[in-house]
Structures are given as structure tokens and as C-alpha cells.
Length: 265
Image (cartoon, rainbow, N blue to C red; front, side, top):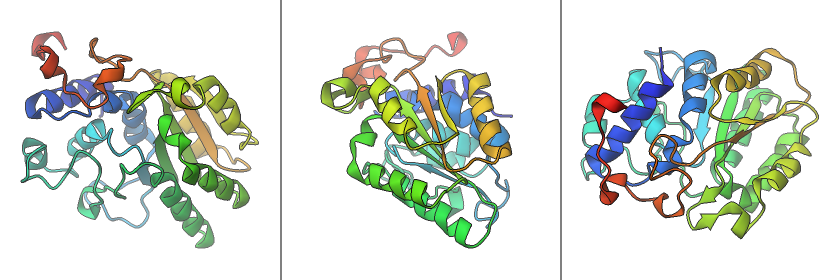
């Protein structure tokens, strides 16, 4: 049973133990990933390459630490990979590298790539009349990439009701706040909702009950087209000095004197 509180603690510990910097963009994903892998995503624990599995694409591949912890909890990612993380000996990197043995479906981190991949997977399953679902998580800053808008238009054109796009809307990107660089998230939400006839959800991305309701509808209701979960989150959630901080996109909190207190987490 995946517990989001434990996943958050272990994610923070991974960064603190290894000095890896992309902690803040990982912490905004914890509840969403915990609910998805705990209750909804279809996979076979002893077979990461099971053809009947659903596909999860983390397009914001720099925010992968919580995903690594969950894969480790499920038995897909070996302990030694976490122990060697952020060293030359590790095969997992700061951004995701495709590894079918670990159920990492795609190499991402060069933003704007994951959603087009997910659309292609979903269309392939539709063509083959397969029941597999595809879930893709993107960042709000990442939605400034033109490739994502092209992918959304194709998803709508092909009526990919087997696809859910999750926007991790934490209001920050690598070089600043999204509303100082492009669309603010209220406006982005309106733009994205225009793609959806039904199945658009604008929610608190840390509320597991609301997250579950969205996944319930996606998995158990026949929609006309693809779904979007616009998840309002806090970048760096769980570490006060990281929360909503522009300077901590790629900065380990130990550099600012943070010490992980095991008894208090």
C-alpha cells in the first residue's frame, strides 16, 4: 500500500542523502502519483513489460524523484539504484531515461516530448482495439511548448478517450513564475478546458479524495474524448524553504542548512 506521506519523506531523504537538486518539482507530484499507482494504473508487479499494462509518461522528467521512490516501493526499481543515485554508477538520472526493466516508459526532461509520445501510444492502442490506458503528467511551464498544443489537437481529433493528461500546475518553472513568462494558470486552465467536451477537472492536486474522483471518472465513465486533470499544486510541498520558491527549482535544501529530521517527518 503506497502512502503519500511516506513517499514524500523518502523523496526528501533521497535528495538530502545524495545532494540531488530537482526536489521541489518532484514534491508537487506526490499525492497524484501515489493515488494513481496505488489504486488505478494497471500493471503486473512481477512483469514490468506486461503488454496489458497501462502506460504512465512523466513528461516533466526532471521532477522524477517521487516517481523513482514509488517504482522502488513497487519492486520495479532496485534499492542499489537509489543508493547510487546522483553518481556516475547509477543508471537512473536526474531526468528520466527509458528503461523497460524498471517500467520507465520514455526518456523525458527535454520538455514537450512526453505528451506527443503519450498521444502516439494512446492512438496505437485505439487502432489495435486494446483496452490499455495512457496517463501523461506535464508541467504548467512545459505547456508553453508548441509540441504540446499540437499533441492536444491530435488527441482531440482522434478522440483518444483512453488518454488522461495531468497538468502539475505549481505556478513555477525553471526560470521564474509561469504568469511572468506566459499564461497564468487560471487562463491556461480555460484554454485547456476548450479541448474537452467532458472530462476536464480543475482540482487541488494535493487532495487525494479529489484526485481519486478524477481517476474514477476516467477509468469508469465512457467519455467522448481525452481527459485533463488540471492539478493545482505547491512546488516543494513538505519542505518550508522550498515551497513556492523560485530559486529552488534545482537546488538541494541541504545547501541552505536544511536537515532531515527523521522523527519529525
